[in-house]
Image 1: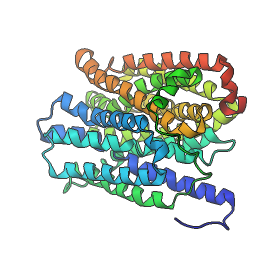
Image 2 (image 1 turned 180 degrees about the vertical axis):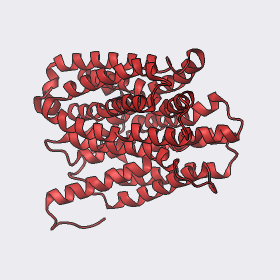
Image 3 (image 1 turned 90 degrees about the vertical axis):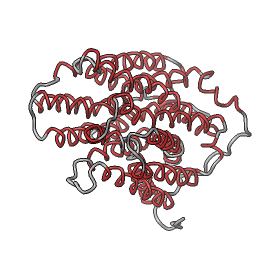
Image 4 (image 1 turned 120 degrees about the horizontal axis):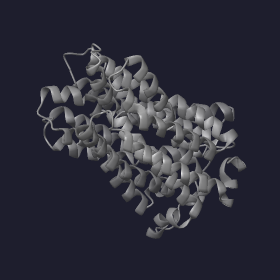
Length: 411
């Protein structure tokens, strides 16, 4: 650890936050590393649509398993954060790298994706806990920065995928993301905490149920669940949607534009996440989350109408969707930070993400089924249900007396 006692607080704060955000970008690039190369793999190997969908949902399955174990044993509150992040990043990098030496059609690839997802349980929730130690009057902004890093990291494989590396083909994306994850394990060693973490409570399995017993926490979680029904299904399939749309409109080279468009659509969400974090500190968490979900839900409902139309039109709509679909995400976690007892904060964040990703498994598999049955024009329509229900939940939280604890009374 670097000793920085003579560096002003503000500089130490933003130095550590910047490194933490960069570490998250690098580590989270693994999430869609295999998803980004699905078109290339399907062109070269006999991979079914169901198997292709498991490239995305396998990570979510692993994440649910990892966060469930972490929550039951309060690992996020009992294991030192930097140690947990480091070990998790190294395991995730190893699992992702092993894809390079196995048959892409083998179910071992899916198992490796599950291991990668399980490792993320020690990266994403732990990162949120670490950044919360720096929060003063800016919790929304700080968590927004971290989710922005997650968003950009999730988009990175699609950017790498645009590189013209014929000698590596799809392996370039897998290798590049593996190297980034290894780099994240190094970066995290230089991250400081803003304040000492609260002492973890004695081991007690019932602590995992606190997020359901506490009504304000429950409402914040319900808002998050509606958001998660939409988010990862959109991220997982927007690239294929763009590829099929560009194919219909005879846009060439369609593979390049689809990969670049997907990177832009997902990556621009990092800007939305940061701006929404800043606004939520000033205008209120429920105001920002409800507004973002109403816009993103509208995009989910009507994006299909643009399928096969002008590439500029479809990218404009997708960009609005990409900004708003993630803009609210950090604020659900910030609500948990502000409403939870400090000594079980890591567990409460882990429970939230665990359940949210479990819900996303259903929508990730529902979307390609809708596309096969009814066409891509209607594939994303069911996703609009999540933001609608999430908006209702946050409306109830806004009316709850405990909402004065959120954003210093800015609801």
